[in-house]
Amino acid sequence: MTEWHGDDGDGGTPNAPVFGWMWPEKVPVGGPNTETGLPLVWITQQVVEPQDGRIGRRCVYCYDPEDDPAGDFALGAGADYYNEAMSCDWRTERRVECFQAAEVLYLHASRLGNAMADDDLTYVYSYDRCEGKYWDSVAAGAKFPRPEERLSIAERAFAHCRVAAEAGIAESCYKLGDFLRDGRGCDKDADKAYQWYRRAYDLGKSDSPVYWGSAALRLGKAHEEGEGCTQSFQEAKSWYSRAVAGLSAAVRKGESWYRGALKNAEAGLARAEQEVSGKY
Image 1: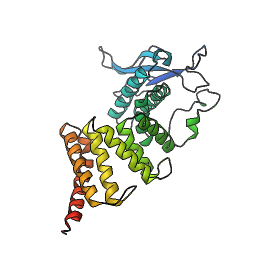
Image 2: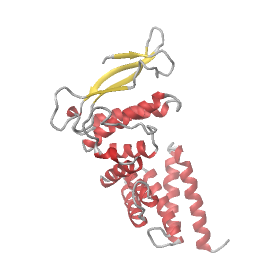
Image 3: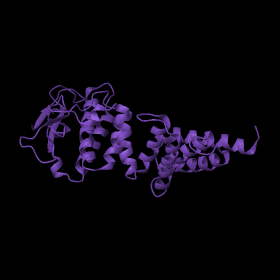
Image 4: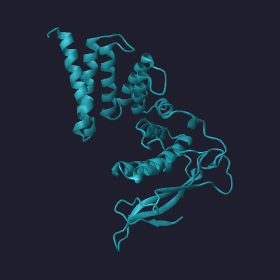
């Protein structure tokens, strides 16, 4: 498997696959094989022919987790595929194929103990990036499905988010709180959701303001509604104020996709201030 070329402007022709996979000829101990359900992965990149401008793909290397003890290569390659998918027209087959490649590579990294891959898999499953067409180990030739494949997509998202949160990733902590608050992929538990929001805030204080700002927004709403904690407009005001500060800093730094969260924080702060003042 060395090289393919397509002939359309998006590189999405049938003779230019986004990635490939194979089972190794010799079954390694603990490595990719039909027992583990995760194969070797052929990594490709989109290329342009300098002579005629045709767009296609070229195979870069074959990913083998035996050469990647910390899962960093798989994480990076998965991120490249994920970013390529996000830049694709949503109507193209290439978009889903890139997300499929990202999923398999993130699964490899997760299996190698890289919790950032679990955070990324939370996104893949939460937003149904592969549109239901996820890695099927049995269809690929494995004897038995991996235990995870028996779970619903929401349950998979929750499971990976929990791994990342327990590893101390602030973003995953407040996401896990959302799962528990809403009962997505798990039973509802407002008390645990609140605890994870607090942990996200504490961890995020030494990280990007978008993390502690996002956690503070959720803590403000929790106190405003009395979900998992004592209802208190004074506490809600305090948390909403911190949310506005953190999310404003994030937006100023160019993270414009948090503008909606910032507006929610500002609206929450206004409600809390009105309740505290008693002036309507």
